[in-house]
Image (cartoon, rainbow, N blue to C red; front, side, top):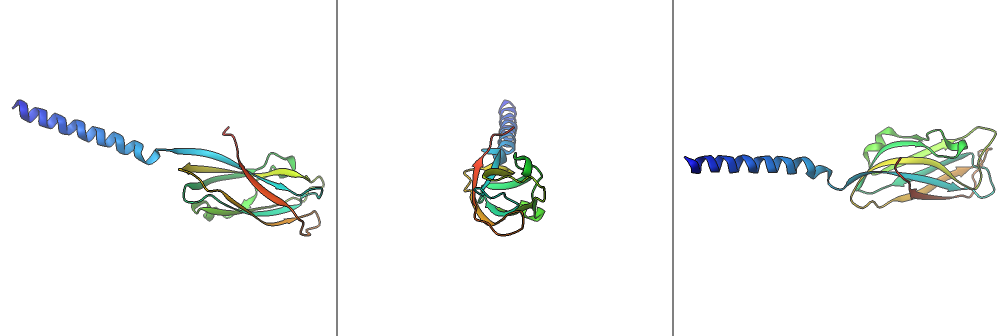
Length: 146
């Protein structure tokens, strides 16, 4: 009888241990990471922009908001269906009279990261206040979680 109780108790402990390990396994190494997008338009005020961002298989995009610059504080436009993919195209137009020039933060992407991300960023288009194409450079930097 004692052997039977020990076997049942051992099996119960094994099941509880497996259940506990199963709860933690999907979340191992998961973190939430903001990523800031910057565009440097030099001396020309930036009136519009469009970029493609990718994070690879380790990244899931969970949110998009505007940048810290007052002229780009409104969230850019994007395809909500792209939130389920490993890349997204974001874009914005600013019709205010005060536009920013130089290197400005235009957007913040919120990512769910598991593993090592492979960020890619590509400037598709940049324009001035009149809608004319301008030369600009795009960059991305991991931000600090708030």
